[in-house]
Image 1 (tube, rainbow, N blue to C red):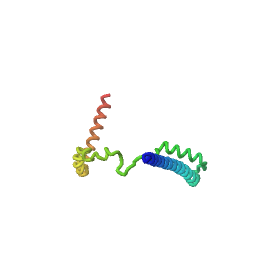
Image 2 (image 1 turned 90 degrees about the vertical axis):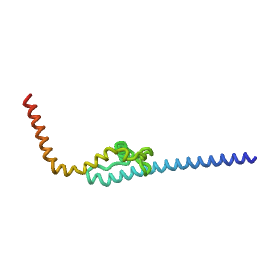
Image 3 (image 1 turned 180 degrees about the vertical axis):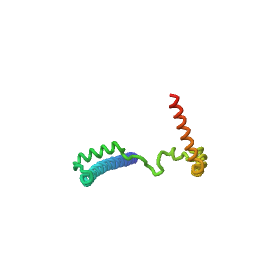
Image 4 (image 1 turned 135 degrees about the vertical axis):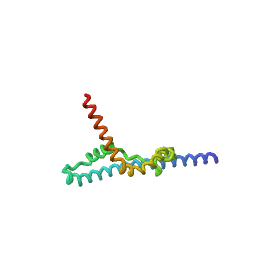
Length: 144
């Protein structure tokens, strides 16, 4: 008799748990639909407030605003990027930047001298290079 009551309590707990889950899912779906409809209404009101005055466009209906909203979502995405604060999957976060760019980081130290090089030799070297290219192109056109 004790086992039967224990089993009934366990089944009752499981049923209660699943009913709560179903109610939560239904509530979330209803809230999502309500939010979507509200966002569409806000889009329509903003359009009708701004666009006719700014650009001379006509006012739109709720259903036209819904179409604009759907087209915008299709063209510009649904905004589902990101997620956790750390960003991205765990295996990407573990990959250290110093390992990834080690050789490039060593070469970057040399770039701190670039401005000084350009002031001293860069402009003259560039002008000489351009002259060389012009002479080569001129020689090629004479040969043809």
